[in-house]
Image (cartoon, rainbow, N blue to C red):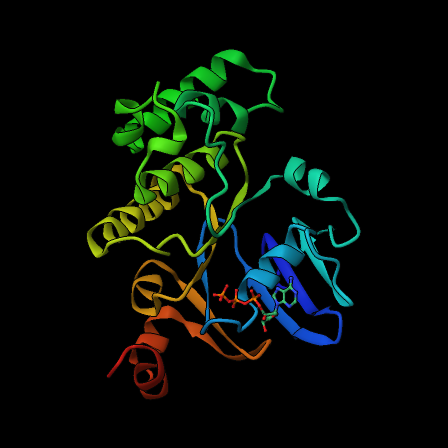
Length: 239
Ligand code: ATP
């Protein structure tokens, strides 16, 4: 074991007869951004859902900070500090932006700390400050992604799992979201496992990456090396 914050070892998962993951292993060191890449249906979301224990693996183990978590319930995993920002965002649409952010901190008892963090999230996401009293349903797609990410940060996690933050967003907004991901990592030291189909952008923010194909890791390496790899360039970067 490498001593990384998150260690996924040989996990397998199935939906009925469909084998979605075959012995997937990956690790995420503290303070780094690691990307999990691959085409539609490769098994990226399933991997995140196994880590969060929204799906029970059929084999393998997941360790967080040295402790096994694959036998824990999702709420226990969240309490240990892993928070997932799901694909499609799943914000509370009928609540205001402020209420959504407060919901992210519902397990915390340190009210002054929550107020400070809310303010800090509004510094990082100025759009959210401008729309703080607005119903979440009225936000644009990019703003909803910002809200979902900021809400996850409000629980003061040790690590966030980001599922396709670029999905359905215009290129300019995607750039903004990725800039924020960089800042969360650099300024807050946040450890991030980033699932993405936008390979180029994901490699530009991460230190290490894994490529999933049909439920198996087909390639892994330093982000800079993968960016320069001919096979990756042909298959994923349109080179
Ligand atoms: P996408 O980017 O399209 O979300 P992904 O890489 O995240 O793709 P998964 O959603 O993890 O892929 O899906 C992996 C495989 O498992 C696919 O073949 C998918 O069709 C199948 N699958 C996912 N969810 C279910 C489900 N609830 N029931 C049955 N099969 C599923």
